[in-house]
Length: 202
Image 1 (tube, rainbow, N blue to C red):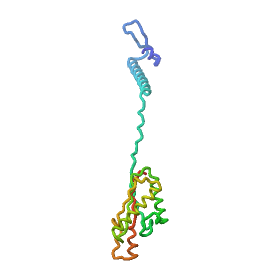
Image 2 (cartoon, rainbow, N blue to C red):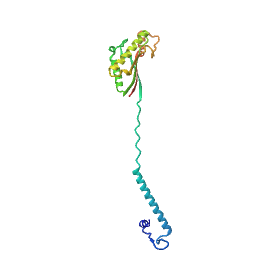
Image 3 (tube, rainbow, N blue to C red):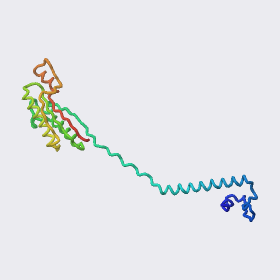
């Protein structure tokens, strides 16, 4: 330590003698001597701390980055209403009676389904207006729902995902009271429809 002090502060000469005092300082006062010792202790402590920190920087490994969050698939529900008048000729239900507009609408539906990552379920529901008997309307609505289902299956949509149902004149969206003939038929057009409810992961 004495040699280190002499090297850092050469102005202060420390002498080792044979006297009882042991160490004497001839060129500085006692206050200056103690100030120098305090400074040196601070330098030594600071150097030690830097060495410890340097060692820790090699010993401590950074925490691993958290794994990216996994997003669960989200099932989206889509409702489509297709005009039966646009799909079929009046009173018709078979695939041969599909109009060009009907083919176009169903092709768009097929494209939408083919772009889905996963299809959970497809519900096809046919409706008619109130003209005619209940038995006739229920049969007609079922045949139209079946035709739409068959069209989807023929274009690659899984049959086990599709349910087809006919509900006749139920769930009417247009009432049209006090009308007759062609005016009544035109007014009831919104009731003649095929609704498609899709649950899929897009």
